[in-house]
Image (tube, rainbow, N blue to C red; front, top):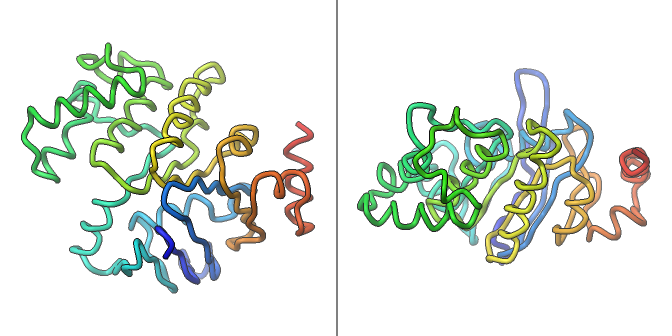
Length: 245
């Protein structure tokens, strides 16, 4: 049984079909990266998975249990298993770093504040931000804010973490510190679904790579297959252009 199974998912904005019959799976602890041109549906797929964009067809299963995206209870349960980090950090500007990381465990998971703070400090240490626990977001660089956003997502102990272009809004010198943080997560048994244009990083950390185009999965395979000997011509065309830059 796959940890995460996506079966024939479709999603539309009005008459525009953004996802078309997408089928993909991930085993526990696997790192699956989504690549493809802008507008191919990668970020929309993550938004569907977390329940922010409704699917118009198909089903999603976590540990064999079907997610009912029309049920508030099912969505709440889903978000106990899954978290997402966006390209924009979305930290609460009126709260310091420690409060940003503890708010979900305290408010949603009903954890005692002291327990949540101990875990939060451990997570901040993991992402190299323990010394900034009392700082406010506007006192941090973009890379630092993104690392806090990752710690915040991890605070609810998700089994599945979705990462949506988490380095695309960063200055080039800040990209490495965030990628190093994600790299450390690949050894912790969390199932990661990554949308990224950082091809060298995708090639290094992924167990499998899925190429998307025009709302469909074109090809799925190990990174060496996708980057060195893709089967599909669309994948070959995309990879050759990306790797030539």
